[in-house]
Image (cartoon, rainbow, N blue to C red; front, side):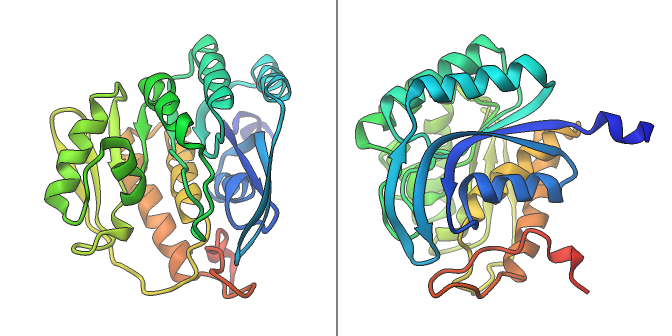
Length: 268
């Protein structure tokens, strides 16, 4: 029994996806698949499936704060991942609490828009993410569209992605990971910047519509690997290998963009 007493504990602070493919549900599945114990603070409840988001209900800030206090009061949190934080008030409260609890392994996935185009981060909250949350982050993991919103550049190539990474890094995080799944050229290539050097993670681009929740999954896998003691560049490498296989074995369930397959390795 002894060896099971030290499973690393990782927290996700995000929205709930009733369809189970993204958000809190994807985060917890990913954490389990990557060998850590996942815990959750729910910020918003979304009515969502593979076809899209039909309703969003933000939880009261006091309830979000109480969830955070409950976690940090009892667990040894080795890493934290943030996802959907829809309003300025929620972003501000979460940032304040993470600062209070001196979280070091913080992965910020700046979720802004759902795959179906539904706004998940209010426009005025983008500024709050830039000023209060990103400076606390070990790594920020925007996709190309989110990176464009954070830096104002139109990103079509890896060269512009490099400029964008430099610009986002100035907001105060330690690393920026720009995910290249949406790049027109060099698709599937991710770019990690630490303020001095770039790591380029070449990947294969898998032609499939079934990528619902892939951003949540990637960021959660990074958080899990950080909790297990990997350096950030190594955590990204391992997480990228994991998300690539989860996408390769994506599930054609539902009638829209199906989810990635978090436990692909359990299938015979």
